[in-house]
Image (cartoon, rainbow, N blue to C red; front, side, top):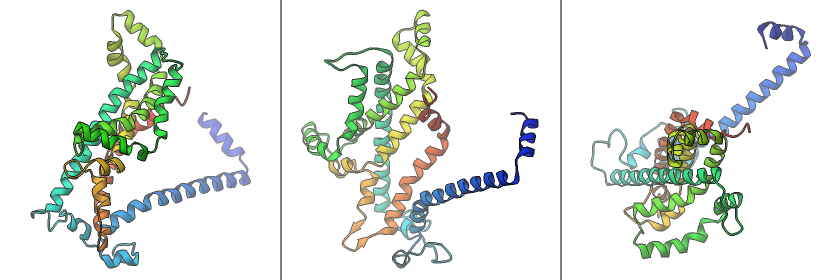
Length: 307
């Protein structure tokens, strides 16, 4: 629509129509602002709780410098406050160890799941398979159906298996288990991504002399990179926040950050300030990754929407 057409349309709009349009737009913005407040308030409450004393937490004080005077209570309990950061702290050492375990397990499992899941999704997208009565659609549904199983059903089998394989309380064991849990989601996302890439590109590359592996790594994978990044970030979030298997299969060496957050309940009650500090530390890396890779997430998750 040209500028002249827009000017003509605006001139032809009656005051009643203009008021209805403005009212509708105001209602939409009001709803979005309200939803943003509802979504971000738990994050705000968590961050401010790290600065509260026990009295401020129990009284439900919310606004700093108005309802309460901020203090480094939560961060001091982890040895991360400005006045304790240069001192020796066993709690800080434990936190850094759990944080490192979470990074290694989440990143390692996500990378492995994206690699394996991309290969599986590419095969399901480009080739026709038949296993017993199952064809490509049935095999894809079989992978996706693994998400239906509740984790508690797999708890005992994995506990026995890991004990026999000496994988209990090891980073390798957590990485392998996390890879299995997020693999169905990666296959689902990447197959939809590969379906949007024309098969003619593969055929043209093979005519030029590339093998199937060469087509995948040199032609298809660069095009599907946004979807792979989106699948990686989604896998990273799921692995980073996983608690059940981490609490079940780890003890000391491979314990992750969510398990440490949940352990802030003792005989004296819940240390809300320490739990809030741990939760804030757990949220921060995901927020940074989401901001940096936002455009890849949007491109990857909307791939195939226009088919």
